[in-house]
Length: 205
Image 1 (cartoon, rainbow, N blue to C red):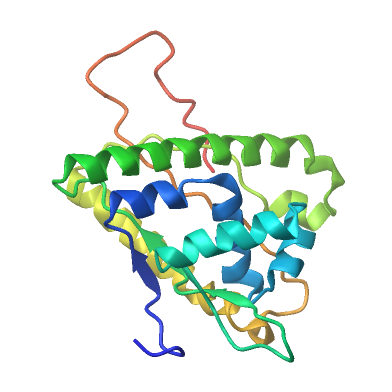
Image 2: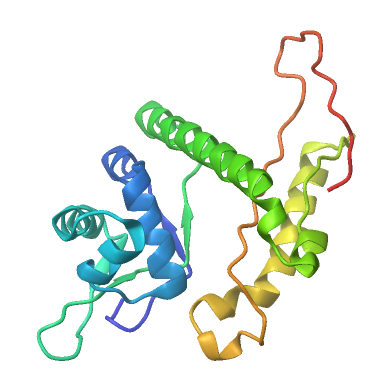
């Protein structure tokens, strides 16, 4: 891969790399580089509230595992960019060390997503009316086979791909476009045990 050619998806298969990625500041930095990058450590510090030294350290750690890389910048600046727009970590690699690291990462992500949703709901009334009406919150209960759930995910992927290029190409963003967090979480309700209150609301998203 050359310095200007990147896959859209970064596949992390090294448990050390997965654990290195499983850090709130590092995931925040990667997210910003994918939507606002390239960025210098100084600019990243301004956006995250972290120190420049902290951002530099975390960016170097991410670069160690190929998640980000330095690119030429104006003058003496050394901006960083993400090496891919998406990160893929297998749920069932067959390697217990990889699976354990992936579980730790997804647990951290679930906690982070929960905090994002709570903050979004608490600040909903600060949005303009058109954004209040556009945002979605809810769930859906469906009887699906594994293949049907996969098909549903593929269909959602296809819809999202219509807008994906806007992350890397700001000129494609229409007037009024803002950065939107889209969460995708789907899981089988029966995990082998049941308890009162397990039934979902069924409220449409």
